[in-house]
Length: 345
Ligand SMILES: [Zn+2]
Image 1 (cartoon, rainbow, N blue to C red):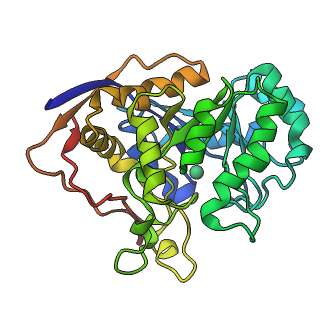
Image 2: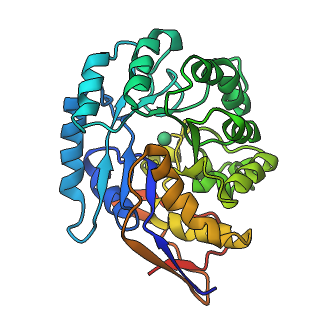
């Protein structure tokens, strides 16, 4: 197969940031995606409907006129989130979902939740009205090994939420482990998971090839090969519980190549090409569309996109641009360092 037409994809997890970075990264997502769930972890975070509306307006100003794109906004849950205000923002359509960050789990998550029990009334309300909960599923206790934090979160927190509120629509975001694939696959009907292109492409060795590779550092951190294979399996076999959330997360080069570098991989530019290559490598191109364009919309209960995109296989590997300029700095573009022949036409 040298050409593939698929329903236009959605990105169910994107970081657009704000200001100068926002201007540069938005078109990289809007050129290939019809919709994206926009993360609320700005500094300061998006805590209510009013802030979400203002942020959405800043995003919409930047979308190129030729791109048909809808940003879906989120609220950052804290132990002080007002449940009736959250409900109103959801009912009025200003906010699509709420995001749970365990305090300290990733970039700008300091105001996140320390004790899940404190937000149970908010989660109960969300379950009642059908509002999706998006979860960064890692514990943050210093004594837990960084490679085990997702599994421990599932055991200690996610299982509790799922048992208390089986009717709550949950996305366990950017899963990275075999345990997560199994828990979601066998778990309750309303529990789904998103997977990033970089966790499908790389295992944890890629952080340390011949020296430290800050551009492959992300959270949750890359895991062992057996975990990557488990992700590949559920993504490429068309399993309806798993879908694309790129977690594209731009940082300036100087903040990545740093004695204390930031976590995040900026993958928006070639995401669809990389995924097509991975799915072809595993002889599952026929399931690409389910992962990028169908499963997520079905989970969120919204229509599948009408538009289509064409992906073509080139004779030679496509050449990736190395970075995007932001003022006098730049954002390094994710390159999985295997040949990618597929190009979005
Ligand atoms: Zn993220």
